[in-house]
Length: 247
Image (cartoon, rainbow, N blue to C red; front, side, top):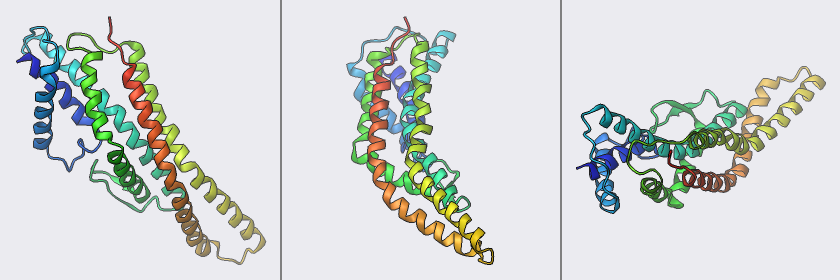
């Protein structure tokens, strides 16, 4: 039973955080069934874990450990999506669309409209690049790097995880930076015009022009999503491969 129970706990933790499958529109029953089938496929290839009673303090600690490992794997892939959500927030504020928001079905919270656009495009690219296969491969490989037992991440491994989380801000800003810079130049130009012609109603003219410039820059910057998601996915796989067992 332990050969199937402990992997099931780790895989369930991964499904709590991993993009797409952790979304609120995916029923809990579907996630449980998926966790069961993945466990049935993975467990026969694993070494028999030590006999630990899950109803003891020893077993409870092992359950928390397996959930933590699964959540960490899912969190690493979640960072990839959140980087582009952050880019959408920055782009929306620069375009004056910060108040134009809609409910994100994945999280159930309001997200700026540009953030939803980036999320949809990145989701399609993620599936096109077999990102879902990489997620399942990563959780299978984790049983070799972090076998079932009362061992957890080392300090260096935890540092790798939260260092990778910092890349969410780095790449989010990198994606939105061309659009934000272009709109900053547009606003500077309007500032000069308002000084030269004070009678001009700059608010009536400025917003449509800023919005139009933002849409043009959005068309220009959308191709940048593909190389950035490729870099983030490669960094995610590299981070997972460096996780080591605490001796």
